[in-house]
Amino acid sequence: MKVPVQRSWLLVSIALLAACANSPIKIAQTTEQRAYAVYGTFVIVEEQAVTLTSPASTLSPDVKRAIIAANQRAAPVVDNMRKALSAAEQARADFEAAKTTQPALQVVVDKLAGWVAQAQDLVTALSNATKGVKP
Amino acid sequence: MSAVLVILRGIATLLVNPALGGGSNLGVTRTAFLLNLFANIVESGEDTSDDLKALAAEIQAMVDANGGPTPAQWSALEARDKAARDALAANLAALDAPPAPQEAVAATAPVKRTSRRASAKKAATREPPNDAHQDPQV
Image 1: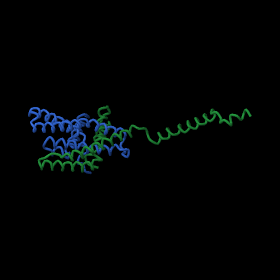
Image 2 (image 1 turned 90 degrees about the vertical axis):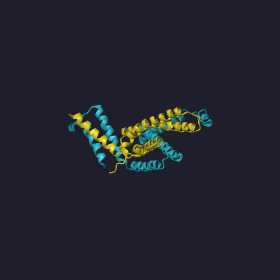
Image 3 (image 1 turned 135 degrees about the vertical axis):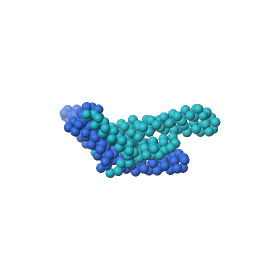
């Protein structure tokens, strides 16, 4: 009896968090715009984490460590997304200069889309709780 | 306090309190911890909301212009990213460091004692100056 009640509460909370999402990532239409939106959201969450984990913050050390760890787990994925974006820009320039083929360009672009999706999931999970909530 | 914050804290309380229908196993405790963590982030998330709105406006402008971010926009974000990572590393170092006042007392007090003892011992065992060395013989 207890478990379904807890599960339903959890589902409600997740739905609420999703509903209060402000949406730079949702607004973006191209892969490049989405990458920028994901990166920008990540930086904003990072800056918030700095405030929350500063010595002046009254949060417990365990909570501060958890916030820092969550950001550190997301950082490598975001970094890989940025590298993939640079590679895609280079490949596009090479294609326009007839230095590479369309299939080769497509491989790089697909890889970028994969990293953007992965980073988007992580950053969305990190930022859902920080978005657009007014008292 | 926002409605989301109240709900998150309420769920966290329910999860850890058996009297309210919650459990006490590790998974439930961890979930409650995460919900409290989210609640704390939500609580301080009003400035973040403004930043997200500004970013959303920036993205909307790109969409309207059918363009992408400029190198200057990327550079600005990278600079903020680097500053935030450095600050987080500093905050983590501060968390891992022992409490400063106690450390200062513990670190300085023995040094002073050792120093005094050492200098006293040195003074006791030090050979007297030439003229004093000659005194006993006189």
